[in-house]
Amino acid sequence: MGSVIPLKKSANSAYLDLRNLLDNKLESVEKLIRLKLESNVGLIKKMSDYHLGSGGKRIRALLTMGAAKLGGYVEGSRDVNLAACVELIHGATLLHDDVVDESEIRRGIKTTNSMWGNQSSILVGDYLFSRCFEMMVEDGNLEVLQLLSSASSKIVLGEVMQLEHKGEADLLEENYIKIINLKTAALFSAATGVGGCVSNLNKKKREALESYGKNIGLAFQIADDALDYFSKEKVFGKEIGKDFFEAKVTLPIVIVFQKANSVERNFLIDVFKKEIRQKKDFDDILKLIKKYDVVNATFKRAEYFVNVSYDALGIFDDCKEKKILQNLTGFSLNRSY
Picture 1 (tube, rainbow, N blue to C red):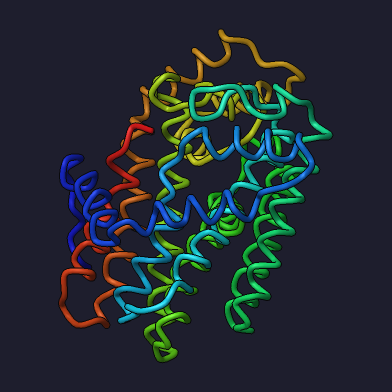
Picture 2 (cartoon, helix red, strand yellow):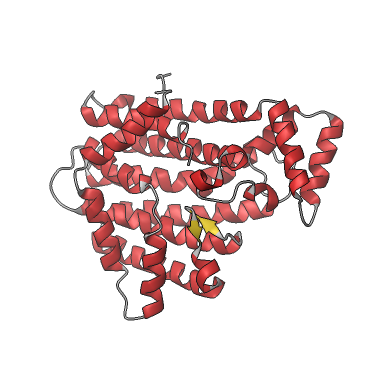
């Protein structure tokens, strides 16, 4: 397998390199998103401006445009339009997620639902979805429509599947991967796949781009789940331990359960069955995570998907775009946010 860029500096540099490679296109994406969300309904504009102005890496938009550039797309604005579309899908899912999870903090500031309530957040999320689908129709490519509409439905399936397994301390790792493949990796895969469609690549190269995006998405979510147990809130931008307190079983807990003795397993089962988990419970979980070196084991799992993602681009000729996208695969492992 290809070797991953292991250094945090190199991975973050690749993120900046991709932004620079695309010149001012990310700025064009931001402008287009705001244009598409213009509304005479004051609350929609106020909430969407707040939500979109809260920051974010726009990694999915960058991957869409980076994949298109790797495929040779130069002239036109389809890459920008569809990158904006991908970000609208992501933004809509975040609005809905925060309601489902009863989140109060995202990206270091209050969530829209904590500011304006659940009903408004759901409706504005629906508005983002509807505008996105209008943009897909405007693009006029059925394959693009299929990729992005399928990703949207998979995200919902993944969220429902996660709810179905809530509090299941003995969750199989296979089922965990199924969940994150649906709720996270599907949109990453669609983003890079759309880039392949825009540049009219052949089927094998489009599939390679989809595999690249999918495996980056898996690594990204695994790293995100690990950060929930050891990052700092002001850096991570979300409440630390939130998954645990919501009884969401993610890979760190799956691995703890795999390594734990019978007494510890019974503790895990009992604590995740509780109606309310206390800080002491979280501290006890952190002790088990440290005891079994779970953070390292979790990142080892993520590293596998990073390697698969890196190798997926082997089908493309060597070029600057390919190198930047391959180097970017390490970003998910070497971030603290």
